[in-house]
Length: 494
Image (cartoon, rainbow, N blue to C red):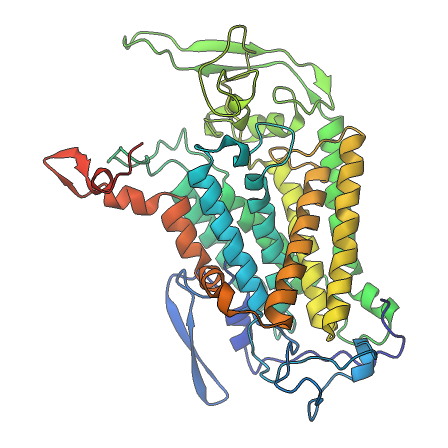
């Protein structure tokens, strides 16, 4: 459904001072969840406590979602009914201006629940675990879903920016906090279950990780939304496209950069060391050589994604348990981890980071696509218009992914290929549309109360459950011997 030519002036709801900015700079799995303290802002003669210590998101829908009496139009509105809405039926709106977009919380909660299921159930049911290389499984949807949600939240958060400089400073601060949290949780400082020690060798620390990738995607998307957005005056379809055209240019440039580097870089032969399993301290590590000398290879051994990480970080700083170790070539228990089969390739034990630098480029594009879906919420009032403008691009992205996979650009989560970005972002868009229809249109919220609560506390759940912080803390309480800890008492063993 095209936007009508007589669109009037787009005038989004304006924050009073800087309060909306402090609350709404959406980040990570849960938009306002990075500041490690509570602050209070005085707005319109009322105090608003901003709990940002791993707590609640404050991303709100900038436009009404549902009216108490849908047949009665609101008394006043800064947007003309003819601006974006369909005349076939009354526009459904909500009277409270600051109402949360409940469907976004539910979507975030479902993604957190999915993450927990695949993290703890993937060992029992390898079919839902991450694909060993090419292909798509349930676990492969989690990361792009989070990135998509970040993009949607950012569009709502930065619908009106009083000061671009202040907004940028806060985005930088939140990015740094998220990077530090990622290094602490996934850099090797915690040694996991059944190990009461902690600490990490800086010469071996893992620099990249899930939270680091989300931080990078968040920051670049936030910068695009703060600085690369046109005038708020939108009176035509052309003006609406022009408002965000620079963001589209950034997405195209990033995609082109990824393709050029992935298929154009020359990958030379390389080698790596594996510590000897001998009990002698004098035993030398085993050295494995990997033969490449090629361009455009998308296999586990000779791809440009891994080469860039090895050159920039050093192979000792990459993830030590590569996903391709579960492939048939590297495991007799594939698709699960297991002993090496006879005549296994030399690269099977080589470190490889699934959240590498080049693959993160396409992760940023996922976030930018989510940003576009958030713009639909900002600029369209009618539910049908919103869902139509979500369903069409989502379907196109899925069709594009299938076509690219058929042509040889396979769906691959580790490399974050263009086809993988397309299919997962399209799936996120369709799922978000369904949740929006159920939660914000038909108001079926009671059945989703648990998912909505999980979405509001997503970062806390992620840190405690997915990063094993809670099990690591619980195992510190034991009787007599460290093995007699609370985890074993309740039947959790590894």
